Amino acid sequence: MGVAIKDILEYDEIKLDYLNNKKIAIDTFNMLFQFLASIRQADGTSLTDSKGNVTSHLKGLFYRCVYFKKNNIKPVFVFDGEAPKLKEREREIRAQKKMEADAKYKEALELGLMEDAKKYAQGNNKLDTKMIEEAKELITLFGFPIVNAPSEGEAQASFLADKGLVYACASQDFDSLLFGAKYLVRNISISSRRKIPGSSAYKEVPIEFYDLKKVLEKLNVTHDELIIIAILCGTDFNPGGVKGIGPKKALKLVKEYKDRWEDMFKNLDWYSYFPYTWNEVFNTFKKMPVIEVEELVFGEVKKEEITKYLEGKDFAPEMTQRSLNGIKNINTLDKFF
Image 1 (cartoon, rainbow, N blue to C red):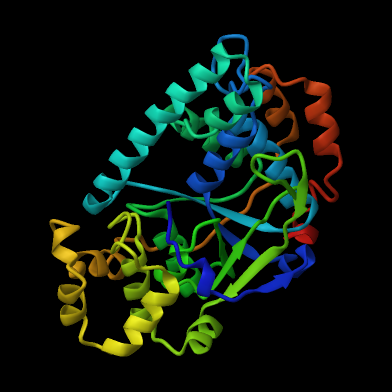
Image 2 (cartoon, rainbow, N blue to C red):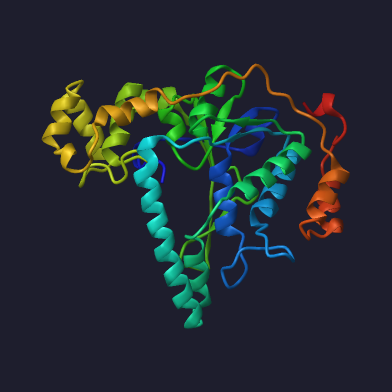
């Protein structure tokens, strides 16, 4: 779900070459779920190998890694760890939505409504342990570093940015800003065009660059106040937020109450929505566990091993080799890094 505060956030549009030679912490789960949702067959089913194992995530990841290499971007793949206790409700909501999407998918298939079937199939994605390990193996073969977060990946990515180990965080969600990331990049994708939901038309999608300092100055709020705004609107730790409050109203309330948060949440009837305090949600953002990382080591692209690994997943070796051969200076690390 992420955080529903986009409407009040301003960003700069950047070109891809702005990220040239920069280390970018990738919200890997977020990215893999995108691949599982979008890379599907005409009937909505995931791509699979001859044994029935899902390969949509590997196809998306392979081309994204090649894309990073070709554009001289240095991704650091951050994986989620154990979910915070307050995320249980959000996970239950997601599970329910997946069940509903699966029922609608099966109904659409029976009626021969293939467009609808594919749309509903995108809402029923599962990233299991096997897929995660496969993704890590492929990333390692590309020579990109992996960081395993103890909890939320975006908190760990933000920590890496704060320590100067990476330049920015990349995710489609805005949680990174709440965890204190200096810079957030959205829409790092192979294609700058995206299909409009429910239509056959496409639209241009710019790369969005969010500077946390500029965001706070523009809104005239502190970082803590930005977290409060997000809590009012709803986060993964208090899904749905306070009924009837969107980001613009939340911003107005935060400025009106100014540090009298307990009074504000009581007046908004917080405790009729959630069985825990707003402070617990706030502290989840402020005190998310992370691990220290000494350095990030980039390695060589192992072309032959990548081809062999993906061939075992029924990827055509000629296609894999063709894509890898398009990477310049593939074995010249000093030039590339």
